[in-house]
Amino acid sequence: MNYILKAVSLTFVCVFLLACDNSEVSDADDLPEEDFIDDQAEVVYHDPYMEFCLQGTRLDVDPNTLTDDDCIFRTEGRNRADLTDPKANAFFANISDFDALEQAGIDSFGINIKLGPQAPKIETGVYSVVPYSVLSTEEKPLPNVMAHLHVVDGDSLFNAVMKPDVEKLKQSGFVTPADYPAYEIVSATLTVTNVEDIPLDEDEKESQELQAKMGMLTGQQYVKGTFTFSIKKFGPNGSDFGPETFTFGSRNDWAYFPELHK
Image (cartoon, rainbow, N blue to C red; front, side, top):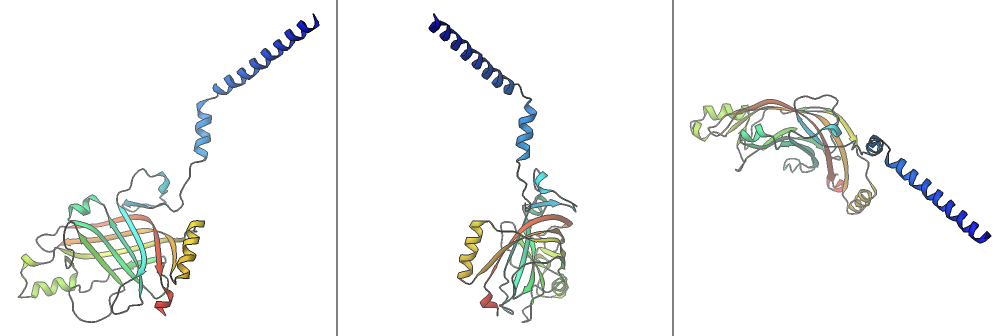
């Protein structure tokens, strides 16, 4: 009899515990869905160095809230490939993948800024192209800030000139308007408002150390600012563009060989 009572008691306890467990699961299932959404929102990663390119002048842009870019903006720090100053490094910046630019027949437009023999890292400031002769064959130092234009589906060589060449071509008796370069670059100004060194992760540090052993120094900057430029139709195949301003954030991957720049 005692054995039967103990068995009944044990069965009752098990049923009670099982009911409690089911109640806890049910309570968890009944929790508001918002609680789970809030937990997920708390772990969303915000990239402090996210790249972006937007049409117009935009202040206090949070790129993590953007759903789409208007264009692509790229930057790079490397040797300038300047025959008049082989040790010179430069900061390169260019914009592409913008509908109105492509409709004008231009694939990309940008500038490069001479920095000297040191690491090709840009600083805050205003960098403007001073009109120069693109067609000149005279041996002289290149301008500190130069523009570069690439056309869509074509050879970009001598497709764009600036005011000094425009005047010479118009006065030339050898070149007819039908043979004029397509574009005149009127102006181009890069305004760098913010620069920050980007810390490297462990893999990037290992890569950097390996490259340093081979004599090459590398790094990354996060660069923010605006780029304003204006292009006019000059030859029969050209079109007007701008003046237009773009706001950007870009990672400047820079690299150089210090021993080659002493």
